[in-house]
Length: 170
Image 1 (cartoon, rainbow, N blue to C red):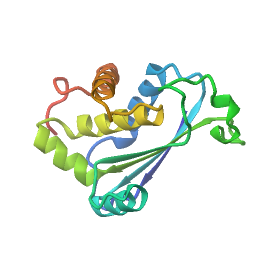
Image 2: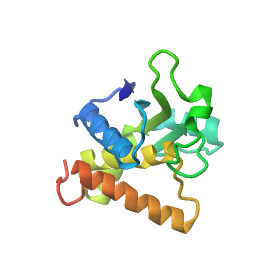
Image 3: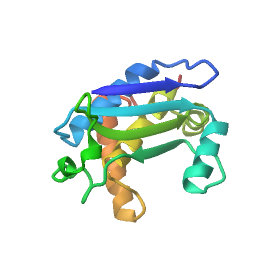
């Protein structure tokens, strides 16, 4: 597993963000039984930058907490049966499956952790788990999809112990 973390957030990040990213990304890959070594790119930024990306990529004119940009298309979520047919799905040098990119607003991590009354670590881990499921083809446009995704997020967070009840407010 190769996780490329680019931290362009200008303020201090007071949590072990690299460790949390490795824990949650690894747990998500295991959770969906991905049969490949994977590469994920993670960009940590602020509200202003994620607002700009959200406007350019999704035509939504506001900041958001997390954006996911999957590299692969799935016939069904976490269905890896056709991935090898896509020559662009794998890094030609490393052979790793290119899952995609995650962009997180650290401003939103701090805001939402306070608003929801849980730790910064848990909020950050939640956003990564949520985004990883998007990278595996899950979505939450329909009510059933939303419920399934929420259940899977909680299972990943429980596995990594980044739960509401196990980590207090930072």
